[in-house]
Image 1 (spheres, rainbow, N blue to C red):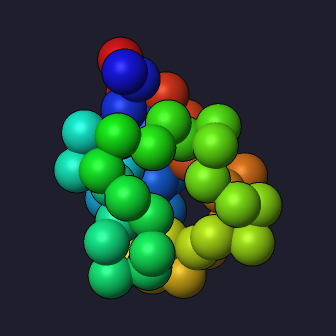
Image 2 (cartoon, rainbow, N blue to C red):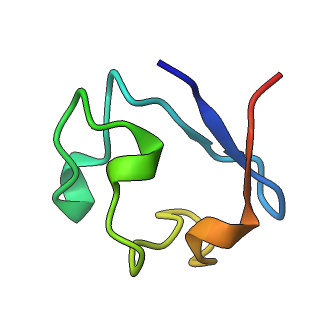
Amino acid sequence: MQKYVCVPCGYVYDPEVGDPDSGIAPGTAFDDIPDDWVCPVCGVGKDMFEPEE
């Protein structure tokens, strides 16, 4: 599955890990995360993430 990087802070969302602290289970694709989810490090929205190269 595709990883996504937060442009402002560099946090990498890894779908294999998810974001359990925010209720995102491991195995959740980035596109399946709710639209109101924010970066757990800097708090920006999903629109500030880009696919990792």
